[in-house]
Length: 129
Image 1 (cartoon, rainbow, N blue to C red):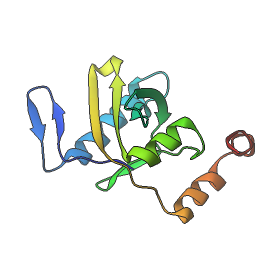
Image 2: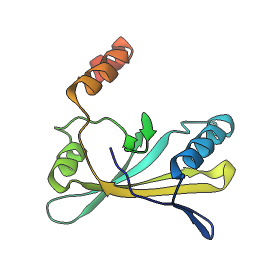
Image 3: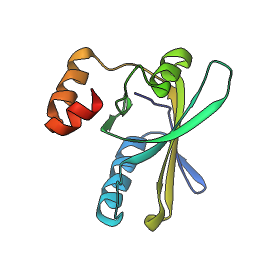
């Protein structure tokens, strides 16, 4: 889960209601983007300070942050646990919009992670395992 106050759009920064604006933009993207409107580039840093970036899927968001899931044994999972910080960029080309987020990482509760895992189709659970 990641969060940082403020959402920038063009020449303004929305400090008070960034999550409602993000929600509106995500709904716009769901209507206009042909593939994975919830796809986000996630950047982490390894123990040597070398950055890595890859795509993940946003699963939810609220004022506490943005939620995605990963395997803690993966490189991404190890980097997230080691540095406890990351950045992400949503890019919706058809809308000519992007949203940048950076902040501290928090691990969701075991119950939340288990509920998400159980919600996945069987083949997806096997692939993740």
